Length: 363
Image (cartoon, rainbow, N blue to C red; front, side, top):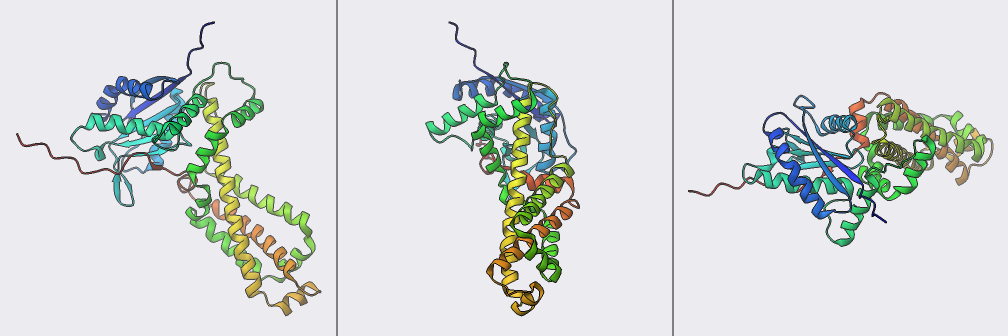
């Protein structure tokens, strides 16, 4: 029986007009050969297109979004943007950034220097592709095997179903490790910190609720079921506001990218929900401390009509954190789409920090 052909992974190189486009065109064959040597479990196809994507000055988020749009339009699996825009991390130039959840990487040509530029571009691009498929450049056989498994998961399966819910469920169960890696790369627990307006609105709502006796009485009479419903509703409202308001949800334009779009949407939803839950947990701790330190027991007892205990303080913190999270949802609605995207997605270095170009030897 003939052995089945390995699945295909298509990598697109999107290069700015000029020197970047010429470099990308020359890298196609070499990149396919290098990737095949390192990961023969899939068939590699590398294609290059000339596209300025954005007008400088532009930041990482704009470049990633524009490259992602081109990836979906071209039906690629991975994409690397070769740009003349300098990239920085902590005010230091870096060669590239990778966004595993977008399956997009950015290669900054100015950071490559003038010497051995083609070789450095090839090596860095290989590293960026590995960062998109795994957790970085493989250090041992186990890391290389992990990247190989994720590449096979990412590659196109011609027998994929076209049924919506059933298809998404299979993508979730069959690509769980990849999904976890994509979410972890986004660092969702830092979402609220990056959204200043949402965080400010959440704290303001929490402080207002903390000093309102009517809120004290509501927390006392609601019971655990109602408090749970309010908590879930506040988390869902905030998550939906972020996803819908910033248009983070994607639609598949073709069958080839359906798996990738499904993974992207699942990773986005998980990132936002975990981020909102992290915000909720932090608000609960702050609300509990505020209830214990600032709500005077005699006033609390008088408002409730019975002696106040630790359970009453916990219920009050529970309701306050839910109301504060709703306030965060209102604040999130005031955030710009760009701010929400930058908060939801982490663009981490996919190459080493750039070093000064070596001076040519004297003739």
